[in-house]
Length: 436
Image (cartoon, rainbow, N blue to C red; front, side, top):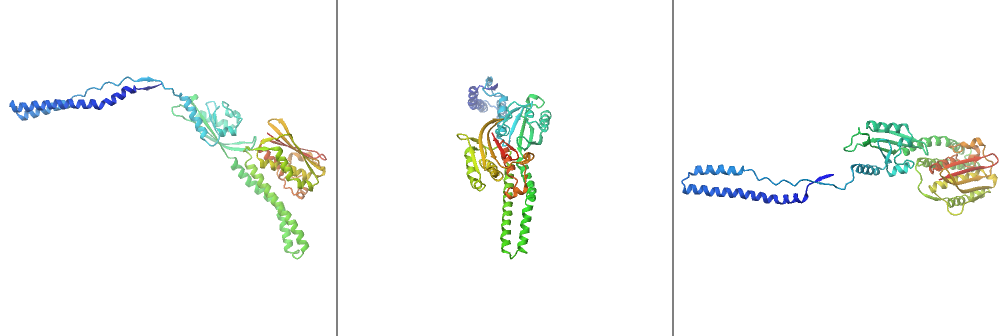
């Protein structure tokens, strides 16, 4: 309820004020004029001395000037007017929501219980499993987050820490838990306490650091052998085989193969590093899987023909669309089918099957099956590790880098999917890619 004066009466008083002042001044001047005439008459006709007349006139003028002004009429009584305005609490909630939405980073407003009052759009996208009125520390179960929320609610202090999560992907965030001290609120009153929790992503920075260190370690290890071979052949060509045309041609061919191997290795390392850098960001595009698999098969027909293999597709009727990054999914199935062609040549066929499933939020499964010699079961769990080779010599002969399945694993994880590998000696290898 807000008190407002009667606007009509107030406007009338304001408009009449100059006129009232003028009337008062005219009344005083009229009295002085009458007095001056009387004084002059007494001096001229009554024999009144002029000095006494002037003194009397001055005294009377002073009395007129000191006469109190007429009292202005009292302002009308203030009226009580009820305005249809939202209550204070609604204003505060709208202000907090607008402030959180204006932040570019994920932000949440918590109440005195630590429950979520509001989430901005960035927080909804990053944490879709958190709903309004949920206790935040019960959903993001981290001891530092729990301690920060309790401390901020208790003491009204700001807390900042680094939150490291490994599920569903490894991420790092700088979390700031700050008290919101609104004007007119008392922090000692529990019901008036509010917290602002913001999440600033550090994942890209962490991945860049890891990428740099991993690239140096992996490159120095894997490039050592081809570089040693190149140096050895160059020294031979500069020395004993300097004038041997046949040896020169042979060595140059080997050197070209080693250079190609280094080029493929560097390309795969860079590809894996790029995938890991953005692994925490879920793709938003739409991919038609059946058409993509047809395109991959067409691109590998030359290799399949050289290996005397047939790549057989078994696809459902109609289009099958998933949310994903088309270029990365192309790389996944290209790697899998190419591996099946390289290492499963004894079976004379490679089968690629797309099926609809319903398995814990995963709805599509692409299976790549070869009928080659297979892999001993003890090697299967480690096949997606970087540079893991069951037979290093065979892998080098087939121009493998040891990174293909590692790339597949990281791309599928970015798409919130799963990779399953099954194999037995003499029964070939089966790789299933499950996608949401």
